[in-house]
Figure 1 (cartoon, helix red, strand yellow):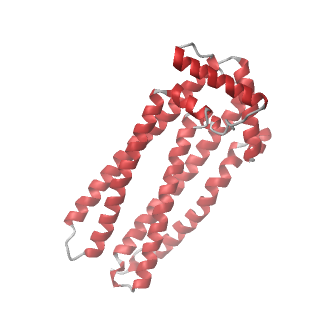
Figure 2: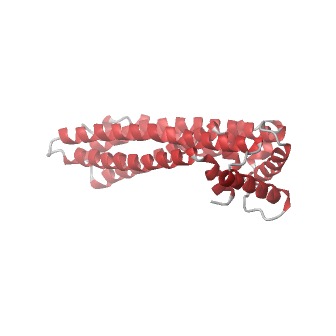
Figure 3: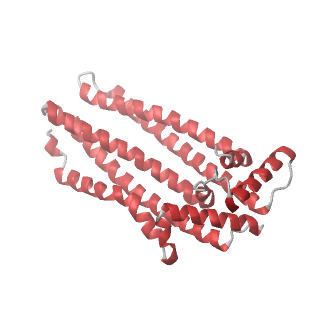
Length: 279
């Protein structure tokens, strides 16, 4: 079989689609999430300033339910995460198919010269890197959509030293510390933050477990195929072995991530205090 057996037209089409989706992941979410007065949120400085102002208002309201201004920003942030996760998921699917075709092309490239084989291998590495990056974007934005309030709070300039925001942050830190050290009751707004922060980390832990299971299953399949491949087919064994090692080692990293997030979720107030202290 020859490299030409892998459709060049399919490869070109998928590559063009991936090339269009990569910038779309970063440009389109703000456009689709915005409506009317929220267009300015595409500017990060404006978004941070708005979050800071609305956080002060929300804290001073004394309510658990988000204030109208904060709810408006959180709704925008939810739509942003959903849109970005969806586009990144489509990109991931395209890259997965493209990667499978390139892998097949590489396995069929035994009769080609070293330069063309190297070009196919390099393209495969690039696609694999982009796929890993896309998967991280999908996971991060699903997490953000699951708890958009906490995701939005991560944009707060917690190092502020003056002004209304600094005073509010000091109050939040004090109430968190009192709750942890003396068991004092938390204000409704703080209870909402603690609850949402826990959901934020549980969401990532659940996804990390799912990804780890998928990686372990993939590694098992690859190693079985590796063992069944004859010693004469060193080309195929090299590819299967490389991806088997990559998937197995990646699963270990993801498991550590899951455990860390479950630990934070189980002690959400402490994790929140670390965040507001700049950790």
